[in-house]
Length: 405
Image (tube, rainbow, N blue to C red):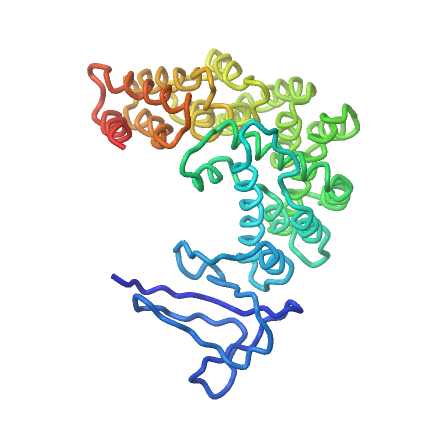
């Protein structure tokens, strides 16, 4: 049955301006951005006095919570990214562009090492956004943040988690290298914000400076240079707020730089009495970029930390959930060690807090879409949990539903 669907839309001309919108049955042109309420199974909107072929900007302001299929070309998306007056659609255009690049790389020969996945035109469009003098810093940070591995996997019928991880990491590195001088400009012009305030302007500037620092540390680690990791270490030491300190720590950690080791120790020493901050410390390590399988051993070691208590739901979520549910590149291991860890923790938590265990059990909801050897290994882990006698109803329901999929 049809739903009531409000569709906010505009038409953008070749010069990047919104066109006046005039329907065929209207005497004069109306506003340049309008909301049309669709109530039928099928409807048509016919606009007149359209001088040249426009690029449609659809669902402006996220006017309806629907998935709208429109076959935009990459040049059309680049046009929207450069000119759309609606911030949501401008961001959406960037995400679609990056998604298209990722999907194209994922569809290539699986044995090939993905390099330069992002097209030259897309890189140029992202550079223009980063350098744009009028755009908000927080908006720039959102536009230049890649779609997550989880989101990329959701677009695929069958998922090779390590392939998805490799493609996204290749894209992250490509943007870091291609925009290196732009990232330097972004950091130098946004990191100084005076006394801390939570106002939107300074918050956005901190976010963009943090992203730039992360990209610069990634390039520095690749090239073996020390300037930007040292800058991150100093920023970690001298930060007057949690956002900047965490961003500097994350930049070192996700670049795999050796300076992250001391920074992690110092962060713990600074905030060991602050439970919520320690949750961030655990989550940061469990959710960091996996470089050669180091995350799972680190998680196992952190479970032995004096400040980790499995009986504390927040602490369990910060470490175990951050690994199993939010770090697919580290969780889906070819040796199945991640699935073994997951099964052990689900069973262990089930005897402590069945609701938390059931939530963790959902990490393998989509096991049937995995390619081999992940699919068989995940299935075996699910069966192991399901076979446990005395399993709570909460966990049994989740696991049984997953196995029936």
